[in-house]
Length: 341
Ligand SMILES: Nc1ncnc2c1ncn2[C@@H]1O[C@H](COP(=O)(O)OP(=O)(O)OP(=O)(O)O)[C@@H](O)[C@H]1O
Ligand SMILES: [Mg+2]
Image (cartoon, rainbow, N blue to C red; front, side):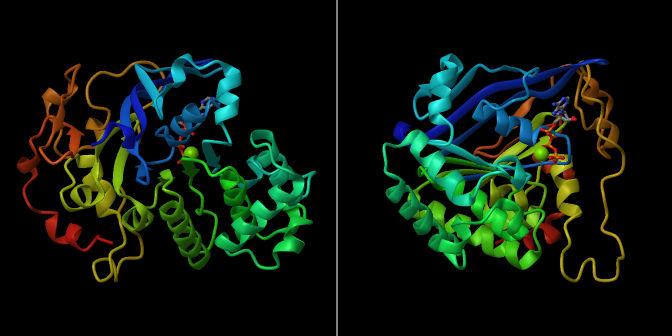
């Protein structure tokens, strides 16, 4: 890969949060990278550290959270040594985020126009008229009906779908190179969800933006991702090209997740989808060995060893497990082939 294609390079990212019960190790040393125009999906069950990872990249962690990393490089800039003011200049400009809850980033007391113009003029030396034109240009791309009227409205006057679109518009006002989208469509019904994902993908292709998309919906992953990173209890347990990971899931947790996917035919007569039995271990304090072992049907004594090796496969896919990829057999492969774009 050409070094200039690299947009984001994250090595050894850790996030710790002090709690009354002890230190909560929410993110436990994760590595990932993103190229221009690429989509990386971060996937995993609730509480595995997806949102905190995105917030750490944006410099928006809760005040008490402690962030450490061996490397946090964005477009050649070392973000670890970046002063707060420089970080503020990046945020909303070269990198932007769509939050899990739209009202987090929309101010209920201001009209959409005031907010969109404001964010643009904070970062760019443009007139109000130019900023308004930019907002209307984005509205057209995003498919906002009655755009000039929308500008005059307050967030509470908009439907859920429109609020999400406004958040996307806000994030795109400065044409960011990196967009972090945290469950951007979860609260929406499926048709609006599909439409917004299509919009995001088109915008990304048009502007060459790198996208980190957080979701627990593997259907969304299969439609959107170039690469996928599977998180479990604060660690990335598997990552690689989306087709490789879906066709050859190598960590037992990834296999479990894919088995829970509704597949036409397979789950026709079931009232409930299967789910992975057991619960995620507490993130407070250290744990030794594989965090998934209590729930893993392949677990052995060796899984409690302090260091579990990362197995790197020749085609870029990698996973953290003691078992070689072939040892699970081909039992899942028939189902996996049905999960493709
Ligand atoms: N402000 C906070 N104080 C204490 N613990 C927190 C705080 N924010 C997050 N956590 C904990 O950190 C862990 C990771 O949280 P995070 O919000 O990143 O999860 P997530 O993967 O985004 O989950 P979800 O899918 O539910 O959004 C969770 O165990 C959560 O309880
Ligand atoms: Mg979250």
